Length: 131
Image (cartoon, rainbow, N blue to C red; front, side, top):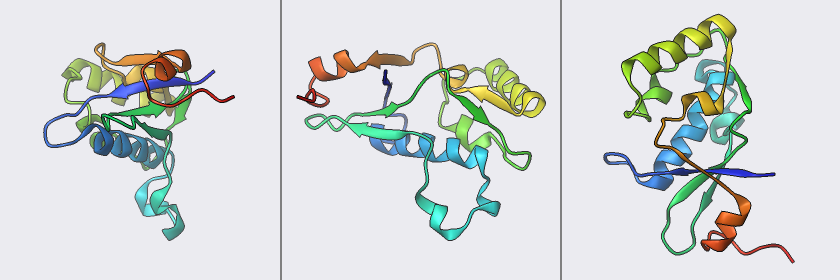
């Protein structure tokens, strides 16, 4: 079953721009920019869903999905997209990533993150149900 993490605008970033950057930076953790081939320029970790009326964005992701961290990856660009994370959470996430070389998507979500199911998305006009 699909889950959707609603992405709020932050600073100068729109909901869509922030969602796309988060998805891209998550991919970059698995395969750092310096190792990527040119065709990987648009690869991402999760699909970005846009609300047809409001333009708000959500990431379609399993919150428990494990993200493997490449030994040459850095987390600074990703954590910068979550300014609401405390320094303790940032430190713990970075430590976990370096020690375990992986973390779950859910572990980077701030407490204010909203995760919705497909029924909510349909009911709130994000997309129509398949017939």
